[in-house]
Every structure is written in structure tokens, then in C-alpha cells.
Length: 547
Image (cartoon, rainbow, N blue to C red):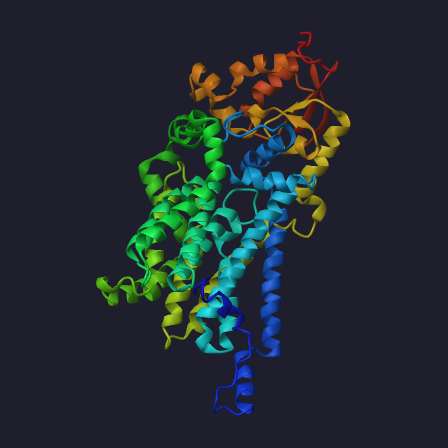
């Protein structure tokens, strides 16, 4: 499957065949009919795809708020409203592309979580579409059956456990995975396209976009660079191709490089030192068993065993893609660029997924679309294999797992309970009590949904706050961290107009509650465990509340 010279070929999937010089007028008509699915099959296929995309968006809108989402939504509002930049003005533990994407979205809507999740669900839906298109093209030799096979691969991804857990959240996975998959496809296009250097530049641009969205994709620079050097394009010099790839990579990394230039030491600390040292110390003090080498090494295999569908993808990749590739001989490794590139990419993808500590299952989600692509390319070359039986088995396992997970989505049919709307309503409600001023909270999405201000030092939600105690006082000052020891000094300059608690663990919020009690704040609005504390007299900037 190529995006270059063969991109136009995708249109020919549904394009009528043209009669040859010796063909009669009736033969092409029969061929055209044989190329197209029947009306009932077309209805089933279209309905399945539409249902899959709709369920993706519904699941995205209905799933509970995760505290990781604060650190992606909040920086965009700080940049949009106050011009504050990550690293330079507050701690930020990821590469910054989504900050600018969300800034553009938030400039046209006040429903922040809704916009962020819809964007990521859109990226996931586009990935599903790409998988469908690749499968439809690769199985074109099967005639109308390719449509149902492509729909089957669409369902395998849509029903995958890792995809279902990760896709559509306001995280930084969906855009990065989509960019990486497109980078892979554009590289394949360079081998057969009419403008290989242009496709290599686009490939580099997409790799840069993936890295600038999520740092764990940084190792992917290497496989594309190696492939550019050693999988030579016939009749082309490798060094201009390498230059094109590197130029595109630099362009894709421009937002990241700009913010690095603004605060080099803070950029390096937030993206590297924090996770390797500060967060490791915090985990060592709280959950030491999660960061042991044995647990880290076994984690991906434990997750694989929990998902029979993913296990089937791995076995299918080995049997259909890797086995024939080995049989052809190592000297002919460059003949099947699609599989060769996947075999280059997967080890580096594992390195990026394995590096963060501790491990979480969403870190290994990027493997799913690449393994699925390997199955598609491998099965398409097994002309005598009955693809339908294996597809039925994989889809059956995925359906069973999805049915078992249905209780976790019981609020899907109750839009009033969807967090994307509930969070906005909560923000609007807070604004009724606090029309202006800053809100002190470890869950900044709520006041931001009500167009209120928050403290930039808490832009990451609970993460910088809870780990500040693992740093020296000089490092906290140098890198803009605020812990319980610095809270009073921070709020003395600009006391909060309100304090929102009950959104995080009690131990994290205890210093906030202590400040509220000692400065004569009282809870005026309480719902379940969430409370909004207001001062007896609205504080003025620079003036401390009476004790």
C-alpha cells in the first residue's frame, strides 16, 4: 500500500474498469459488477463502519474524567488567555504540539474537554479509516470480498482492548499514533512514487509531528533514517533522500525547538530529568513494586495475555509477515519494504513504550495499528489462505471482550451524565459563586470550563504538586515547582477567590484544606466529596486574609 504513486489507485477501488482494445462492451460491465459489493453487503459494511465510529465518539464523550487530562487541557488555556508558555512559565512534562492544537480549538468554543476529546476521537476515527483503506487495497485481488475483509480489519482495531482504553481521551496518544502510521505509509510511497524526495520530506515532517506530540516516539527517527540509507530507491541517490527526510523532521519539530529555545534547562528537566529522577523517587516512596525491573520487563507480556485479540495479532504478524520475510533470505530483505519497515519500526517503538517508568497499558497501544498493518500485508500475500476464517475468529474474540466490557459504558445513553458536559456545567456553577479571581485546585479543568482563572503552577494538575517534595528547595524554585512549603508564599501575593477540593486523593489536597481553614474559607457548595471553599471576605491581591 503506497500513498505516492498508488494514492490515486485507491480511487480505482470503486472506479469502473475500462474496456481493452479487444473487449466487448458487455465484458467490462460484468467486471464492474464483480468489483462492487452487493447492495446488502454494502449496507452491512457501511452500517458497521458508521456504528463503529459513532460508538468511538460516544465512548469518548461518556468515559470518566482522568486526572492526566488536566495537564493537556490547562496549558492551552494559559497560552490562549495569558500568553504563558510551557516550560518557561510552568512545569510541563510532555512535548508541546497539543498545546497549540488545543489553543486553536479553545479559541472557538468554551467546552474545553468536549473539544479536546472530539479532536482525539477524530484522530482515532481517521486511523480506523486508514486501516480500512489499506486492507481494501491490499486484498483487491479477492474482488468484492475485499470489502468485508477490510471491514473486518476495521472492527479488529475498533474492538481492540488497547484502542478502546486509549482512543478519544484528551491525552497525547491519538495524534502521535496517527502521525506515526502516516509516516510509515508515506515512506512506502517514496519507494514507488513519482516524487520520492517530497514523500521523504513529508515522512520526516510526520515523524517530527509524532515526537512533538509525544516524546516516546523519538526513537522512530532511527528506523526511518536507516531505511532511507539502506532501502535505496531505485535510480535515486540516498543522500538527497536523507536530506529531504531530515529537513521534514526539523520542520515537524519546530514548535518543540521553539519552546526549547525559550527555556532550555527547564525543557530538559521536565521532559527527561523529572521522569527519570523526581517521579522515580516519588514512586519509590509510594509504590516501589511498580518500578522494579522485573515488573517493568514483564508488564507488556502481562498486558498481552489479558487481550486474546492482541495475542492473535502478534501470532498473525509472526506467521504471515515475519515467517515469509525470513524464508526469502536475509539478502533479499529489501524486496518487501512494507514488512521490512515494520520490522525496523517495532523494536524502536518498543523502546519508546518501555522507557517511561512506571508502565501503563496505553504506552503499548501504538503497537496495535502497526501489528495490524503487518497482518494485512502478510495475509494479502497468502493468496491460498482462507482469510475469512481467521478474521471471524479474531473478531469473535474481540466481540466477546467488548460485550464483557459493556457495563463500564452504562452511562453512554445518559448525555447529562457525560463528563464532557458535567465538567462544563460544574465550571459554570463555580462561576456563579466566584465571578472573578483565581481558583486554587488540583483539577484546573473545572474552573477553566467556567472561564475562570487558575494558578499556572498547578497546570499539570496533581503531578508537579505531589512530586515537589522529592526535590530540593533550590530546584523547586529553579524549575517553577510549588509544594506545600511554598504554598503560603504563592498565595500571599494573590490569594485565591475560591478553593476547589475533593477531586484528588485526600493526602494531596490536605495542604489546600489546611490553608482554607486557617484563612477563614468555608465550603459554600458541596456535592458528594467535591467542595468549593469561599473566603468570608473576598481577598484583595497583595493582602493576606485575617487569621
